[in-house]
Picture 1: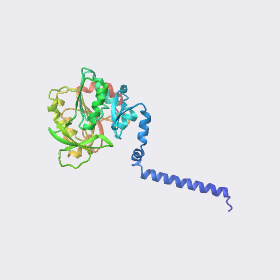
Picture 2: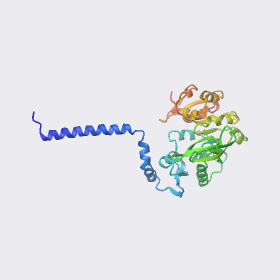
Picture 3: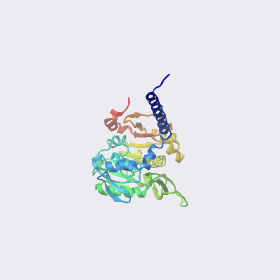
Picture 4: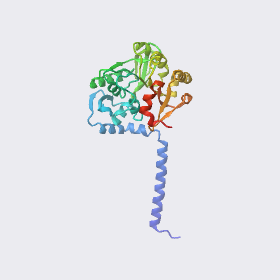
Length: 325
C-alpha cells in the first residue's frame, strides 16, 4: 500500500507528540512532591511576592514592612521565611481559610491569650478588635521573630498588648527552640541542653501559664499554635481555663507533632471532654464539621475550635452558616 510522504510526516508528528506527552506526565508524577521546592529554589515565589508588594518598605536584615488584608495594618516580616511571612506578603493573611472565622469571634473588651504569636498575623487584628478595654497576652518564644513582632506593634500604636519573649511550657526554667529559615516562626521547643549541637537555636525562658498570668481569669479566647507543645502547656493553664465560662480555644491538633512529645492523645482529648468543650473542625474548603472526641484519636491533622457551652450562642451566631448538617 502506498503511503504518501505527507501522511508519514503526520504520523511521525502524532507519535512524537504522544511520546512527549507521556514523558511530560512521567516527569510531573515523578517530581510532583518537588514542584513547590523547585519554585522556591528559582525564587519564583520571591518574584510573585515582590510584584504584589511593590510598595512594601525594606528595613534591612531581610525584613520588610508588608500589609495585612485586615485594615491594611503594617506588619514586619522576614523575606527569608517561606511559610507565614511569604503568605502574608502574597495573600496579606496567614491561614486564609481559617483567619476570618477565628477573628469573627473576637469582641471589644475581650481578654485573649495567644501562644505562638509568630510574626503577628493574628495578634495585630486581635489587638484592634478587642479595643482599648480588652487585653491580648501574646507569647512568642523565638527572639528573632519576637523582635519583628515588637516592630509591628510599634508601627500600629496599640495600647492593649502584653508581649512576652518566653515559651509557655510544663515547667519554669530554660529550654531550647530550634528552627529553620524556611519557617522561622515554626520552631520546636526542646529540653535545655547546654551541649546541644543543633543549628539555628536559641535558649529561651519557659513559664507555666497559670503562674505567669496569675492575675488573669475569665478569658474569652486562647489561640494556640506551638508545634505540638500544646499538650505540655494547656494542663498548666487549667486554672485559667476553668475560670473562663465562655472560653473558645483555637487549636492546631496534629498527632504527628504531638507525638514528638510522647503525647497521650486520649488523655489530652479527655482534658477537654471533662470540661465539656464542644469540638468543631475548620476545613480547608471553608466549611466546618462537628467532631466527637473519638475523632480526635485518629492520626489526622486538624484545625480545631473548642468552645464551652456558654460560648455556643456566639459561635453559632458567627459560624452556623458554615457548619455542615
